[in-house]
Image 1 (tube, rainbow, N blue to C red):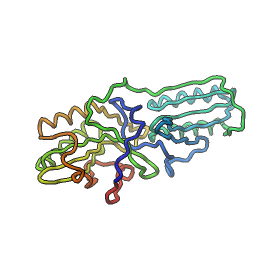
Image 2: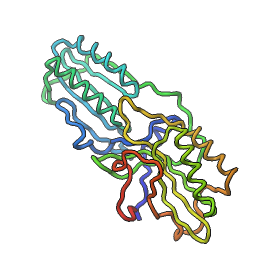
Image 3: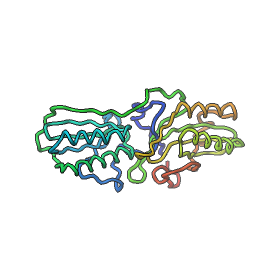
Length: 282
């Protein structure tokens, strides 16, 4: 049986307030973006522990003018990291992170438009390059806070449409079957309150009892619609449901009762990037 992959990168990106949803790390988003200057360098995970990266090496005649325009453009992409290496009129532009969302690729596309306006020339590695100076423009990120609720697991997925992966919060729990529908309805309300527009689950019903594997996430994260989720606020509301229902975290019974039925979609956007509709995807 194949379980959802818990990515190594989770330990590096676990502040309580974060962006969930569709991202790319191991592979390029084929058929979504087409770059003239930028190349995609995948992350490897594991012990390699490197971010995925979009990088362009170019020659620009009026480099100061280009950098000024680039800095102005960066103000519209507050969630991205931009790093520049400069050697006279040569410049290497880096955009990297452990998860590249749509807005990272949109940023690269807009940089490419600037490069075209500047009549930039694409360079390869055969041209000598010695870093004379560098500039770094970090993303605007909130203060780091640990996730307080240990019943929340942060998980990635296998590859979906256009090589996409999905970053989600997973909760395993169990309760008497008679409360299942009411619990799902309450979780829908919590998801909407906490800026989550994807909620689906797997289940297994047995002897008037139910094991559940719940997933909460979002869809594609684009420049003008980036969603942040406060997982401590979300987790606090989920924990309060243990006062309303005989709800317990973790699964009850043996492996035979593991919740493999589903997935059942409750809230959904960008479904083809999130759900594997094959029978028994495990």
